[in-house]
Amino acid sequence: MIEFKKVTKIYSDQTYAARDLSLLIRPGEFVSIVGQSGTGKTTLAKMVIAEEHPTRGQVVVGGWDITNIKPADVPVLRRQVGVVFQDFKLLPKKTVYENIKFALEVCGVEQRKIDAIVPQVLKVVGLEEKRDKFPHQLSGGQQQRVAIGRALVHRPKVLLADEPTGSLDTINATEIIELLLKINTLGTTVMLVTHNKEIVDRLRRRVVAIDDGVIISDQQSGKYNL
Amino acid sequence: MLVTIIRTSHFAFQHFWRNLWISAITIFILTLTLFIVSLVGSLNLLAGQAIKAVEDKVDIDLYFKQGTDEADILKAKVYVESLPEVSKVRYISRDEALESFTATHTDDPDIQAALAELDSNPLPASLSVQANELNQYQAIITQFESSEYDTLVEDKNFSDHQAVIDRLSGLTKRIYQGGLIISFIFVFISVVMMYNTIRVAIYSHREELGIMKLVGATDWFIRAPFIIESVLYALLSSILAMSILSVIAFSAAPYVNAFFTGYDFSLDLFFVTNFWIIALGQFLISLILAVGSSMLSIGRYLKV
Image (cartoon, rainbow over all chains, first blue to last red; front, top):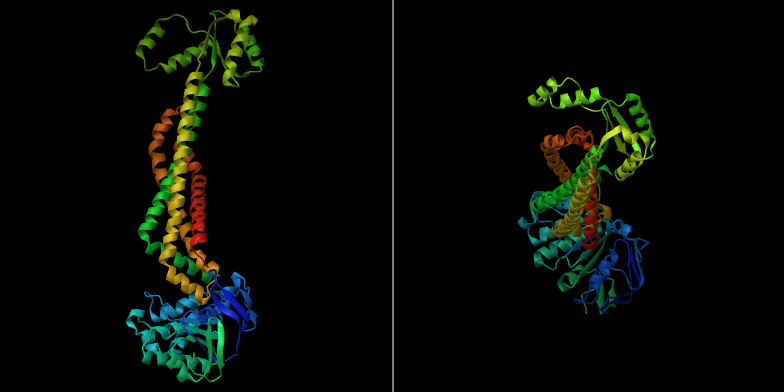
C-alpha cells in the first residue's frame, strides 16, 4: 500500500530526515512509526501526502509512484490518504457537521452525496449527538474524532495519523487509538506516527522505530523500543 | 462544474463580507481610479469638440463692392472653388445678408429702426470661404489677391482664430498630460490596494486554505474564490463609477450644450448613445486592474 524505496531526504540546511530508507506497509496493516522528535518520522508522513518529496529514492502509494507527482495530481492523492494531526486543524466557526462537510464541499462533491456521507461518518466516529456543537464546546478527544471523521469522508485507502494523541489525556488518547483500530478493521491501512510509548506497547501491532532517518527496528507485533 | 462555481462564489462572498471594511476601501479606490480615468477621457473629448467648434468658425469673407454684377461674383466663386486649398465656398447675396442681419438683430430695436429708415439694402454680397486646413488661409488670400477678381472686392475679413486654437490646444494638452499622470498614480494605488486586499483575505483564511489543501481541494478551487472576489470588486466599482459619471454628465449637460450651441454636439445625447460602450470600457479597465493585481497577490502569497 505504501512503499518507501531507498528514500533519502536532505533538507536545505543539510539535515537528513531519511537515509536510504526502505519500508513497505501492506494493505490493511496498522503500523506505528515511532522515534524521538526530529528523527524523520513526520517527514515520512509528509512524503506520503506529497507535502515533501524525497531527495533520492521512490515513494509509492497504492501502486502509484508519487516521487515526482505533478502538482495537479496532488489533490487526487490527498483524497486517497486521510490525514490527522496533533492540533486537529478544525475550523472554529464551523460546527462538527460543517467541519466534516467542508472536506467534501471543497472537493466539489454534490450536496446529495454530502447529505448521505456525513451522517455515516459521524456514526463511525461516534459524534452523532454532537453534530451541531462547535469545536470549543468539545473535549480534545472529541475534536480529534471530528478530524478523523473529516479524514474519512473520501473513504481513503490510507489513514495517516501524525501524533493524533499528542495533546490528549490518557483516557481520550485511548479512545482515539480504539477508533483508529476500528477504522483499520473496516479495511483502511493506518500509519500512526507517535512517540507515545504506552499506546504503542498496548497496541501489539507492527512497530517501526526510526532514529536519525534510519529504521533501527521493525517488529510485526512490537513494543516501543529505542 | 456548477456545484464548484456556486461554492467558489459562496466563498468569494464570504471573503468579501468578512473583510467588509477593506472591501469597501478597495471599491472606493477602484471607483476613484475609474472616475479619474473617465474624467480625463471626457475632458479630452470635450476639448476635441471645442477645437473643432473653433476651427469651424474660421473662414474668409470676401465682401464685394456695391453694384458688382452677380454673374461676376459667381465667376469669382468658381475661381475660388477651383483653388486646391479650398474646401467650401458659400455665396451670400445682398438679400440673404440683409435677411440674416435682420434675423440676428431681431431683438435690437435701434438696429431695426435704422434698417427701416434706409431706402436700400446697405449690405454687400459676399463669399464665405473655408480652407481644408487652418494654415492654408494665407495662401488662399495671396492667390485671390493676384487674380482678376480682387478688384471686385471692397473688403476681406479673415477672422484669424489660429491664436485661440493654439492656446486651446496647448491648454488641453497640458490638462490631458496632467490627467494622465494623475490617472497613472491612481492606477498604481489601485493595484497596490487590490494586491493587499487579496493578501489580507489569503492571510485571514489561511486555516481554511490549509485544510482545503489537506483534504484534496484542487488548485483551481482554492484560487477561484479570490479571483471571483476581485471580479466582484471590478463589477461594483464600475457600477459606482458609471453612476457618478452619469450624474455629472447629466448635470453638466445644459452648460456644455450651451457652449456648443450651433454645433452638432450634445453631451447628454453623446453619453446616452455611448452609455454601454463607456460602461463596458470602465468594467474592462476595472477588471484588468482588479484581476491582474489579485493574480499577482495569489501567485505571491497563496501556495497551493
